[in-house]
Amino acid sequence: MLVKAGTVIKADCLKALTAVADNSIDLIYLDPPFFSQREHSLTKRDGSESYRFSDNWQSMAEYINFLKARIALCKIKLKPTGSLFLHCDRSASHYIKVMLDEIFNSENFQSEIIWSYRRWSNSKKGLLSNHQSIFFYSKTADFKFNQIFEDYSPSTNVDQIMQLRVRDERNKTVYRKDNNGDSVLAKEKKGVPLGDVWDIPYLNPKAKERVSYPTQKPVLLLEKIISLVTSPGDIVLDPFCGSGTTLVAAKLLGRKYVGFDISAEAVKLSEERLANPVKSTSKLLEKGRESYRKNNPEVESAVKSIGGVPVQRSKGIDGFLTTKSGMVPFKVVFKLEDLKSSAQLITQSSAKNKFQQKALLAKFQMKNSEVKKVESEFQLIVFTDLKELSEKLRR
Image 1 (cartoon, rainbow, N blue to C red):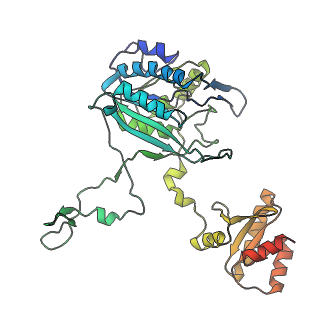
Image 2 (cartoon, rainbow, N blue to C red; image 1 turned 120 degrees about the vertical axis):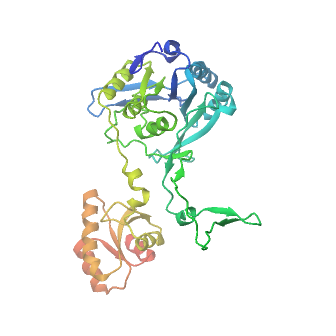
Image 3 (tube, rainbow, N blue to C red; image 1 turned 180 degrees about the vertical axis):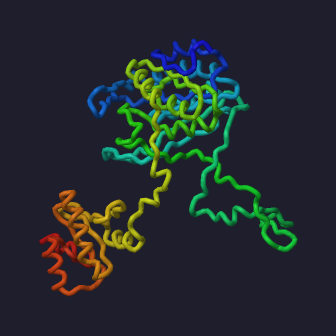
């Protein structure tokens, strides 16, 4: 290998790849320019540096030819046991898949990985785009692959999975029994083999690894790819290394790395990150989405019963309701003795967020004197059903 491992080089990968020895790379991950037809720019939070690049192309043909010339070279550099992962989005994924089939042959297509995430976006006509695609190709059928297992879903009947099964005389699947008629348990179950839909959160704006690069990917995503098809000491190459996430993930996992980028700012940023590699943890992945549910089912049911939007991460607000005067936050109360404390909580939350109106959904009968007392003391609306709320908000 003419290019030394552990380096980041400022160059167009079309030229830089010629200095890489053939059949020497274990994994190539590409996050090339997309066919987004837009300019990208972000400035660091301290205002010290800005990162800018363009994803504008004259035509789809120009874009595909740009990728094809570089990916054809990538294939030559891969070991016979090596793999290539190409990251793209819906703007050109169907064209890219055809091009990759031509270069690698369709029989070496292994998977289309869907990176799924939730991300805010400007409202527009159509479905919100919440995923990107990563095409996985091997150079040959003899590619390295490390099976990864995940935990069983909470809805899985694990007790059934742990029992061995056999075919009976009618060729039906039944549980295996021992001589005493007891179920025979499996010796080992590692979990569920990793699938091709990966739910990995997009980088939080306040994440420790965030460096204000416009298209920065999370280290967690690259770690999963690298772990899947390489071993410690293997060489990982990123021809469009950008902010250096692939290289950081490779270093953290004990792999060797090589990165190319045409931008001097990107090369500098990659080197800075490699000098002090940082990976953000994800509480969402560690705890699961269900762990963020604050409301019990009874509260959530009450919120939805009046057409409200449930709120999970607030002590003072259980939901929002759309009215003619705008969104109104409210809290659900089931016991008379909880009325005052609930009124205090929603009053505090509303004051903090400067909400003009607030309400209590009291799921019990109260005397008018009690209602007026709470409404007067906390300057909020108390109601027992949607009709009553609508009437009070129209006043």
